[in-house]
Length: 262
Image (cartoon, rainbow, N blue to C red):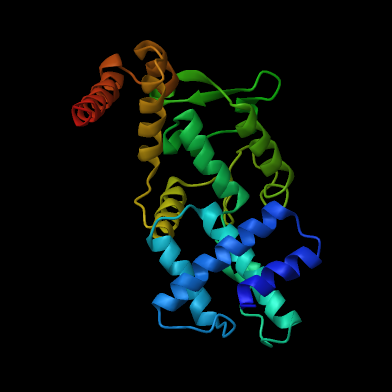
């Protein structure tokens, strides 16, 4: 019986759910293929370098963060199996070190940018009093001091509440009127958002910046058939011609895909 088959049997003996077993075994098989391509034939010869190299390989190939973290979970389970069967003495995979971390606050920043379409300056300026928790609406102060209301999705509202109960409560600036705080001040600065997105983008092999989320917000609404005037109001555009740019851009993409169908 090879190590992967032994690992599968070990998981069965420990009462692990069939779907989880399938996921763990599949991930370890993929890792084994990667090692063979590297010239490593003994899967039981698990080294820290192999795990780090594999994680970098996944990131370079633009795997989603959740997928990479799932694979790390599987490799830790395999590592613990090897230790239990005395096939190795070292725990080289640990979730604390190896999982890609996205803090709850940073998670919230990304979702606010993606699902409200706010500008980065507007994002940093959101105060707790701007959020109506009863009606799930966000009041945004835009350019020229103009106000607009943006409905908040239920899952985004839950994330806001979770952030307020955890990350925000642990901050020394928790009495600040602002929703998003930094370690050094009572208000998050837009430069910190840019730096965070740039760093996350490098780890994922993508180019990430605030306006990209705003662009996605507008184009997704237009693709779903939302009227131009409604998108313009939600985005806080001063002129509908600004919103029309996204419509034209979307139309070009649709035309391009249509031609490929010929």
